[in-house]
Image (cartoon, one colour):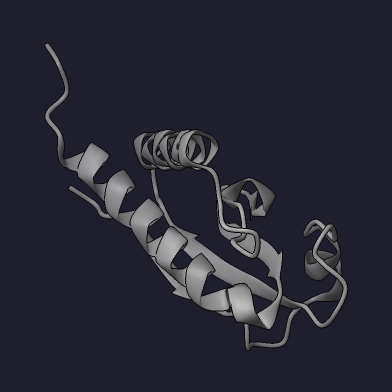
Length: 115
């Protein structure tokens, strides 16, 4: 069973059109664009990623967020990468959320499909 992987490439030379796609609704001050490449080779992996993201978003809505906590809703997802414009102080939160996203998606992939 293939696993979904995330590789951060934020520090690599970013193409300007990729940075522009990230939402700019971040509080005033310096921002960083986190960029992660996805290794999700099949439609089932992408569906697991979508389901895990929906689950995390529901949790955010249910429990609320701290005033400085970034929302996974602001991250821009494509079939091959994730872009997320945040403040430098939010970076550790984002890394935790993306690791949880990856963990949950891989857990969904490991579950046997119903007959």
